[in-house]
Amino acid sequence: MDTPSVGFIGGGRVARIILSGWEIGKAMPERVIVSDASPAALAALTEQFPSIEAAGNDNTCPASADIVVLGLHPPAVGAVLQAIAQALQEEALLVSLAPKWKIAGLAEGLGGRPAIARMNPNAPAAVGEGYNPVAFSAGVTDEQKQQFERVFGVLGRMPEVAEEKLEAYAILTAMGPTYFWFQWYELLDLARSFGLSGAEAGEGLAAMVEGALRTMQSPGLAPDIVTDLVPVRPIAAGEEAIREIYRTNLIGLYRKLTE
Image (cartoon, rainbow, N blue to C red; front, side, top):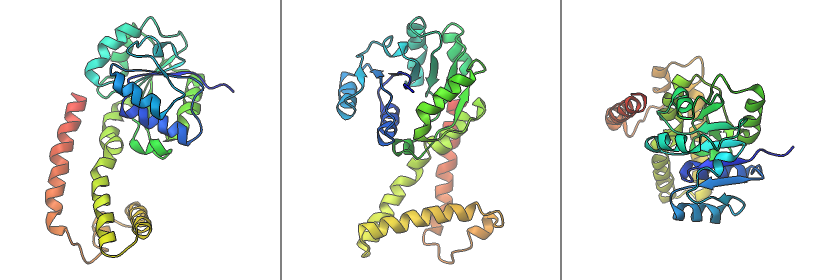
């Protein structure tokens, strides 16, 4: 079965994540068109993914694809919607990756277009291990959902969620890796300085993280029991400060995304 064409309006980080996931999963659509206002960004993207078509700053070109992916910062979305409305095919599905912009606002900007999805990709989608919540407008058909699944399913898990929960998922899953990656890299460096090889440190870290999460999710263990399983907590004195960083930064960001 031929894959539908996919057009990206915006060739930044999220486009690169999705393209990487397709490449690793050997599921690159036959035709991918990308536009971006930055010639340098497009040049870097086409160098990494030579099969894609660069459309320069002409957003109407990717907007003519079967699936149109809107990968822009929220302030740029409104003007682009007006510019591409006439270029969209009648049966096309618009997939917005932008926070804040609700389906109703996207539809209004396109003159009432019915088939719209909003998705929150997270970075592990680049290696096919993503957790990418998606919400669909009422006008998306079963056939369009199946087509969407065929194209994006290789990127990882894609739970269908209520649209009003997408910003919460953005804080938890889309941005979540950034809360831990720098700590894990620091642990790997320390483990190697203590005498473990890179392979030993990497295997140990992966097993620890996976086991720790499974322990948290065990139905018979309450949070106070879980946190008391290890008698030595070397950074216990800093835990409250870390919690305060989470509360201050993430509550403020959530409010910014939902206001």
